[in-house]
View 1 (cartoon, chains in turn brown, red):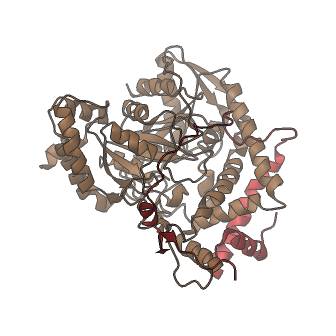
View 2 (view 1 turned 90 degrees about the vertical axis):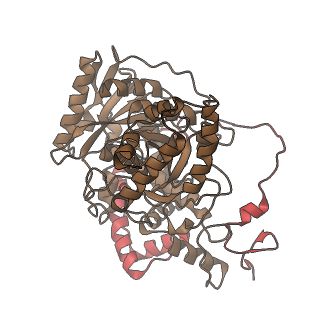
View 3 (view 1 turned 180 degrees about the vertical axis):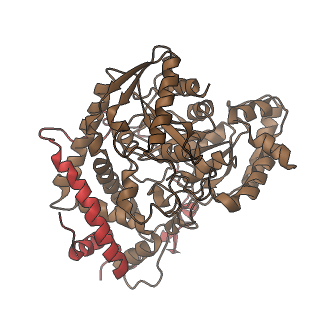
Amino acid sequence: MSNSSVSQITSLTALQLAARLRGRDLTVTQALDAYYAAIDAKEPAYHCYTSLCREHAYARAAQVQARLDAGDVRSPLAGVPLAVKDLICTKGLETTCASRMLAGFVPPYDAAVIEKTAAADMILLGKTNMDEFAMGSTTETSAAGATRNPRNPDHVPGGSSGGSAAAVAAKEAPIALGSDTGGSIRQPCAYCGVTGLKPTYGAVSRYGLIAYASSLDQIGPIGRDAADCAALFGIIRGRDPRDGTSVELPPDTPKPVQGLRVGLPREFFGEGLQPEVAAAVLAARDRLAALGAQIVTLSLPLAAYAIPTYYIIACAEACSNLSRYDGIKYGHWSRDAENLRETYVRSRSEGFGMEVKRRIMLGNFVLSSGYFDAYYKKALQAKRLIQQGFFEAFGRCDVILGPVAPTTAPRLGESLADPLKMYLSDIYTVMVNLAGLPALAVPCGEDSAGLPVGLQLIGQPFDEATLFSAGYGLAS
Amino acid sequence: MTIDRDLVLYLESLARIRLTEEERAKCEADLQSIIAYFDQLNALDTEGVEPLSHSFPIVNVTRADETAPSMDPELLLQNAPKEKDGCFWVMRAVE
């Protein structure tokens, strides 16, 4: 396949590609050929993937093509290749969480979102790189090595879903799945200049998602634009009896941008915000106002407490969730240990990287006797106040607009030395997870170095449709 | 809150993790700055606020009590570091 025909195919959005496949202008195999050619050409520079599944993909392509040929179109994205973050279980295909702990782990079952995208006739291209166990904001904590930002390979792609966002930005995938516990879809989308949705907590089944902080984790789409994300969200959402926190969703009734009340929290435009990021987000505010949106200034006074609240809760849940890695049932096993306790200690010490160890230890600290009330219980109380703050704000507006991150993508290596500094960069994203709300990250410009800036639109629970409607408005 | 080497050792023990001396020293400093940051929460008045575990009020989620086939044990044991007679192999837990 020539370079020009590869780039013609990989430049299409997922919905455009699906239309070409339905119209028989292209075959599913040609789409796969183009994407694997792009991957082969670009992976040495960007390292978006932890593994590829060519054989599986071409076998699926034949089945899907037969259905398309017979006019049996199973979804708006039928035939479209999909990249999946490597913490979502794929039956028969290695799932590592970018950790030594799960090197070689082959899940015996598919996650709910894998079943759903397969039933929609989407085709898995491979698994994408991430921060180890989704703990990090740069994809540098990956045991597989860092991913680079396709917009400038000296910079990080963000994290933890850095591989998924970079693959979509580098046109190594038309569309991808990521997960967002404290910004892990939105922040890499902002850094790489692509669009991504963190759905309302409970909108998408977490069955088969390897848990980090269960009360905050959500799987969501990453795409070239809001329409692609809406299409993939439509496929993966909905109740699943295997995830007791997933819920039946109300019908989509998007509010139009004309007359939409857009709230700007003062706290999102204060100290620490890179001026070029502020300028790009405010320019987007003006575009929404020009489309007829009504701009409302408001306050989220609890914003200052978001980071400690988030990290206390996330680390507490992580230390509990990650206690399952003991070297017995699956995962890394230290074979020389002399007794059972040593098996646990050595397997875990060898299997986990430093950021994961740090968060497990922080979790043990906030849950331990004598500190539980002062830290963990206090954080759960703060979480309620943070959620109430949003609900009060939504009395005056329909969506909230703000930056995704205080800066554009940092250089590789800048964030690892000081973990607290890395945590502080999550200031605008973690509140959304604490409150369980949906948020859409949309690119809105560049800084003077040409690095992308992203904004986020935060919605009321289960009102993703309005976020997409505002997202289309911003893009047009 | 002051973090010292003994507390780090205690947390290692709770976490079933052993750090190297070098990692331990770095960890002590990192935990000190992170937990000092957590302490900012003390300034927030939470008197009488009910803790919020789950974002939305969903309670008593149940499913129909129906039997279904279990997952194939052979498949489940494929990832076990060591197995014996169709079971996970574990070192003696009680002497």
